[in-house]
Length: 272
Image: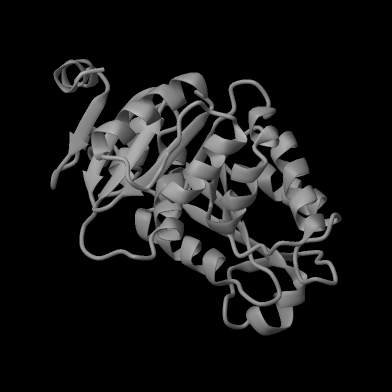
């Protein structure tokens, strides 16, 4: 497609957000009471770290979530319970990650929530990965995935594709993870680091038209890029944010659960 043809075509699906929100009505309509501002379950951590879960918790609170529950492996309970009173605990395995038995508690907690965020720092244990695959296959609500958890699902996306009908997943991922996802899905094109913004917009448009159950939040140099069912948004990143995925995921998950029928508008607004 020629540059001029692309620009004309892309005007139908590419929306650019500047300093002001593209969708100010979402700001005006925000819940005034915490009881109606949504319930988010954050899952993450292993024996060596719970930083991602704590960061996601803080980001969701800052974004205005109603209530957050945080589920960590119980190997962390003695050291974390005083430092992080919001934490709850599920069975862990000898490697320090979630055990298979944690699935029941995760499913129970997810029934309480309006959305679940798999925040990362879950380690590379195969038992933990198998448990998460099982969870993703059973959970029918709004699911947000980032950091090393996204690494796993980008490499093995079958369970995301097999999620129950009409369920949706937000992947808050780097371009490298997006490239890994494309390879795993055997795409005929690649999300390489040398793509220009126009090329990335076009490829994400095509990708999310082909995989409408996957919503993407990534970044290209100094811009966030949001892709939802063929609609693309770009937004300038305010200030220096070299470490961004977990905080962006916490904010995106919060705005999405508060606006479940407007995922593109919600995720785009969340990056302000």
